[in-house]
Length: 80
Image 1 (cartoon, rainbow, N blue to C red):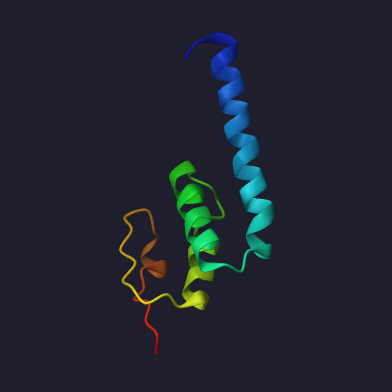
Image 2: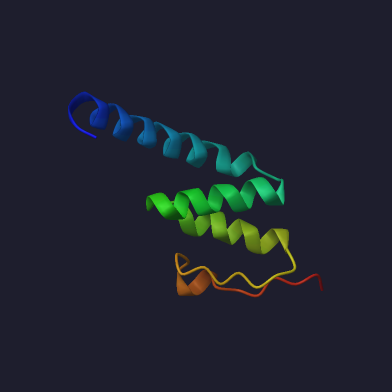
């Protein structure tokens, strides 16, 4: 992409990230939370660790081994 198209694309991405960051506290569904956490991680959002931290509270039932996670948020999710 070049010129105006590149600028528009970057601005749209920033708006999307800000939207996800604002919605993060409201998300309760585990699937929505997982998608949002991944999107924030891929974009390098400062809210990535918060999103993955919320996932630990949801307690999935799988091992989350994402290289985008900080060491503090690499956890085993279980149904215990």
